[in-house]
Image (cartoon, rainbow, N blue to C red; front, side, top):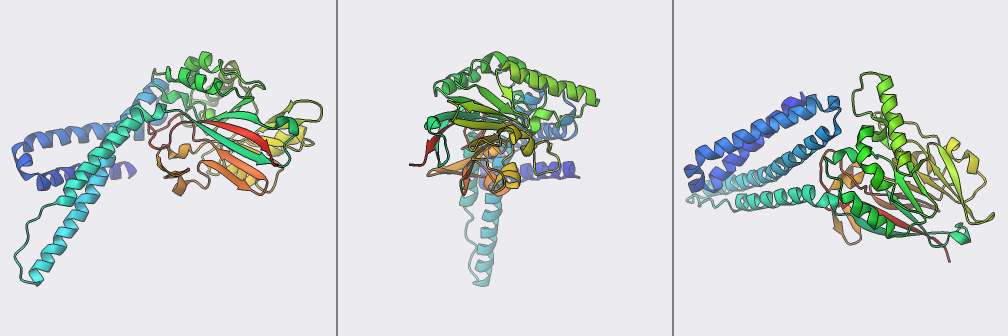
Length: 410
């Protein structure tokens, strides 16, 4: 049923676009009518093949590069049809205005005025502009790495950790890269330039498969931090978006993913904690939980009690949790964790920046979107992520390197 609705939507948008061009530019459409229908006919057939591929076969493709190529095709499909949605809205509005004018003219016994279809023309310009923006997001925006400095003040931060610098990265989604990995060298240079005390990676390192990390092992192993590199797993890191032939293959893939993470120099904190010390008095605890998601389809393997059991006597705790909903359900006002670092939402990879804040679809869909949240003396920070999934681009939500500086309340 869903597939049939998508087919009908694609066909309707193309028919509307042809009708709009015919009404707005009658001379052009009359001259090139056959060519216009051929172009739109080819678009419909190619688009239906892409949609059918995603609907029927996406969970059976075990080649991550083929998956990345599919995402690329899907992105360009969006670049074609999202503008058509905007164009259709302008056409409908233009038509409603025209009908209202005709009705008013009949009531007042006036001659019908010439329809100039200005709104439809503006709509076509908006559609073309939006298409260019989407293509830019696919080809450029997804690689526009941005350093986001964040200062957070605590009243219980040990004195020796004043100015402690944590670099957080998240949501690499390595499998979304189809043979293009050179941009990660730039990423590593930008991170190392921050001279971090600690580097943390908050999950969704792959899309599904361990092989995705093979080209990245030598790159991410070059990341350097004084107190080491630590990571937790996200919902994608369990390989649950692929239909495995048997549980043994799924388990072997999961073990291989953890092996690659270790080879990249990251220590996995799967429901456990470590202590970072400056001396016997100045200590902080860094804990990590496995993934936990509020939706049923997400793995629920986090165990905060087990994670902090060994560091219960250390007052200042930092937690790595891929999904920010875990903070709401299990940390906020319940566990003495000063700072929780998460990812997951990507900011939906689309949005706009107004002042110091970014807004997008994630503001509607996610309870916690991006950026810093506070509840009494507890903080949650959500990183926008580095990679992409499904839509292979970023518009107004550039990939983020978070540089968190811990400060003491004066």
